[in-house]
Length: 295
Image (cartoon, rainbow, N blue to C red):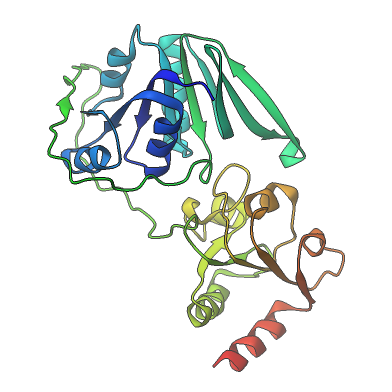
């Protein structure tokens, strides 16, 4: 596979840096602080830049060519869209496959709710791509680098003034590395019932995930735990779906699971067409018995 001369990885993400090294001859990383810079060097970045404002990155990338890679998140999508507008370059999001085709970048993404795969080609001088989790394997820490990052000059913006900075609350979940995942859907009636699911996860040593409505509509769980076409693409050894209907938009997120087990009271639920083992029954009757047996 041909490589692009320059790849710019935004964020200290091992998967993105692995993709950058796979696709590019030279890898540059943009991070938010010196601790992330040290990690990025250790993961294989050739040059690392610490930035404070988005406009600092835009200014740096002006007149540059190559590929910009970002991890899939709301912030990254906003970042990518802004780069596309300010630098007049092509943008593709929710990508699960990237390759070079001459001077163009070919991106694969799911369309029609995961029923089909589309290939989009970016022909602009600079291409911006937001990739799904699981697209690349996480890069390994290769060394304890002593290199120093470059600090991008802060852009003065008179129209915006920062009054306060608060640390972002991060989830401690990493479903991409989990060997066992238990996911819940709308079959779980209320938030308080999640404690039973969490007890089950603890007993079997599994991470807890969910469908999109649980994370985005009900807001019971963090976005990092939402499995599906526009978020986590997991590859667990065992995936247990509890009260999950099994819509294609969710199931593409666990299509590479080694074994799928489903509990659903609707015998016609789509999840059973994917499951290696299915239990037709009310989760409020089935799960307590399972927990009792495990204890």
